[in-house]
Length: 295
Image (cartoon, rainbow, N blue to C red; front, side):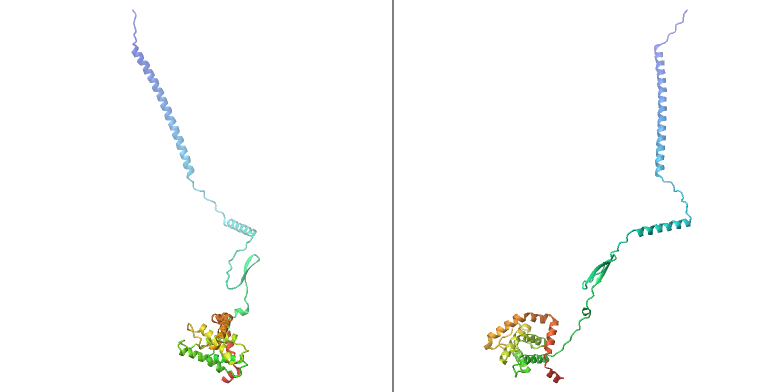
């Protein structure tokens, strides 16, 4: 009698699937193991590289230097100083520019000598170094009038009867007439105005005058210009200064004096040195014999 063995296909299939599943499980376990091994290796490399970078950034403590003996230090210092001096001697020495102060009022010249800039000042003459001496001239109005009269008497030597008192009287009469008629509030005769009159008379009155009338007419013309130029009033009348008979001569003489003496008239008021010269010249016109009598 025989024995029959029956195997169901389902169980066989199940066993085959279980075997396949078991095989797949083994494969998955192997892949997981391999993957975990790769992860651990990559992590180790990352940690190692980060450690190297941190080691490069951090500077280690420097090693302690070995101290040299004092004799060797001194020798090195002396050698450095010697080399420094040698390099300075080799370099060309250029002149140091120094600003030279200049004075506007003095003449100065700059001269370069041996690479140095020096200033040479021109010394003025001894005359300019010494301040000019102030000359003080004092004279009263009466004294200057007497000097003016003496000058006219000496200039018009042909008029033997002319005296300085007569010339002063001509001057004072005109000044008194203007005061009485109200043409001026104060007298014109002052030392400065007498000097101005002398400047005009010295240039206008010639030594060829041979009549007292001619001298009086010319002198009064000079007085009119002096009053017009130096007087305090705006205008003055012509009658005290001019005679009706010589009207044309009066104006001709006036124009001739203006054309020739305008510059000196302006200079007398503008330049004190010129005024002093004219003042001194007038004072020197005093007659020596009369001055000795006054003393």
